Length: 87
Image (cartoon, rainbow, N blue to C red):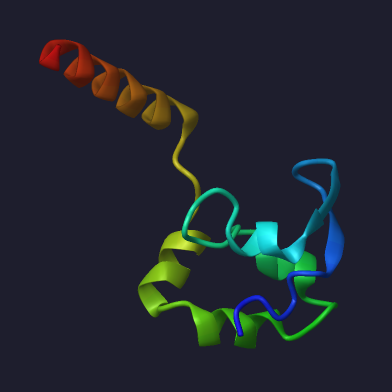
């Protein structure tokens, strides 16, 4: 069961408050938080959990370094320009 640990909570250093495991495994997207291993390593076998519930491609995507802010901003600008051009 993918939700077997959802009731557990931990302090999130990124957000600055307590959060449930359910947020870590799906923080507003289909992939888990890339820091999930660091945070939950001492609580249960998080590596086995990840390997059991996510594909290799999903794991690679989730654990890849985040885009640089300028790249993200350029993508947002391009999206906005496409939307504006379509109207």
